[in-house]
Length: 473
Figure 1: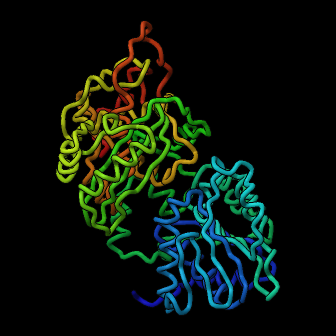
Figure 2: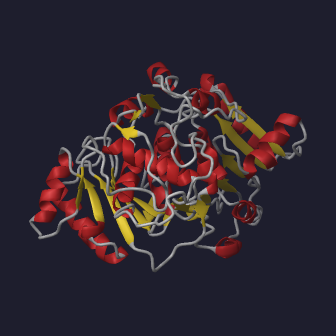
Figure 3: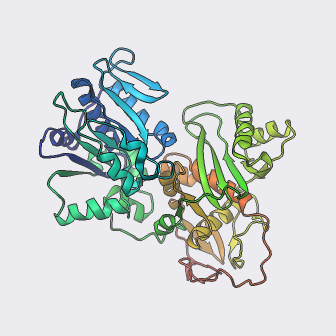
């Protein structure tokens, strides 16, 4: 791995940490600029330099941390020349980095749905803390986590909270970003904004990102947090925000979707729904890992039993590699739904209580994407706040641009999204496969006008996206 070379903006973070007047460092800005990497560099340096330092790293979900912030810390340790087993030890039970001088970096969960009031966090005595993707935190959990610093600083360590975040429309924008822009932020908080010039990505990677929808480029690459034009996407951030819920109906029928990968950078993902609430997303096969379909089939059978949804209430990508996994299950006398994204739309799948749309769908995947977006808008489909990977799921969803020609809706293909994202939208596809099961069969309703509220798509219960009949892709 290439040795670490800090750019000017990353060096500013080190300077801020050495300023005794600063107790909170907020790293915001463009994606791919290494905000988490820089935070990891700072935390690792402090823990290595000062004995008996305790610096917890918080992420909303532990399962998300395993895929994101923990690898960032381990990669950064390697880039700093640290040797596992000599300069530090990493363990998974519990998730922790330990140094010979007694310093520790525990990786903790800050999930308000599992820890009401942050009671588990209240007992932590810490030197400082790092809150990764803090825009995903409930505000109360943010307050609890940051309040625990300054309790293990007997060797002169700085008492710091390090926050890393991407743009959003929530409490972080109100309490920090807007005040920073207005010049009213308290002097103890230092905001350092990263832009494309600070990126560690290649020119080719940045060029690919610049092909994303305008609203995404403006917010996530050009740091325009107030940009709100999402007309090119079926999905709206305000609908995602309104869909979040603390409630899971334990009596609801459960269903699942499974997007299959075998090897390479694509992931195998299982999405679990309680009724029409997206309750859990699990990465079964991670990037860069090879996992045979038989092994995945065995995992799914066990998971279906543990989580009470059953293989007969599961949809699996039956194209390509997924067909092999379906075959593995059939040999066990198990019969999942076979989801073929390029196949024809399914008339048995619809939103309950909502009149049929006059739109025609190019294929099954387009139909499911439309139903997901429309269901969010109408408040029919929900997201459980404790579900892992919600921000990444939203990002994948909102990447999908569309076109309508002669009342036929067509959404960008998975390959087009993969080209712009740099990765396959595996989380998103697993969710729409789960919805393929959860939205069938069609209930009988006497009043077909139910659910005919005005639509952001245009046309009330018959959304035809206003007068948009020209290509938006």
